[in-house]
Image: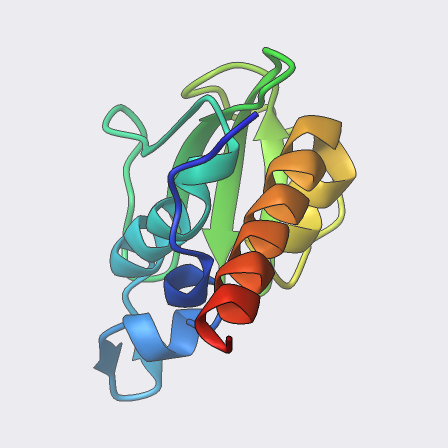
Length: 133
């Protein structure tokens, strides 16, 4: 499987670099867009929810893994967590743990994500090796 991806661009970025600070408050809507940009290459579908209200302190992201599983993710200062098992769904009864990074969360949910991420790393290393000759 070949992926057209430039891993050096997204793997070295962090949410703090991509966000707009408003004093000590980050705009989670902008953070959510940065999250989508960072890992879109390794999932089937990923976008910021247009149905659920985002705010400065919370945003929702819909993701479909390569295995076809759909999730609604909540992004806050605490991190990311699954809040629903369908797009635009928030189940108040769920109490899933927060993950500090989208990479950690997707790694726990999707073997296909792990494979795509690993392949992107290998491609980058191969390009570095070839450019060093």
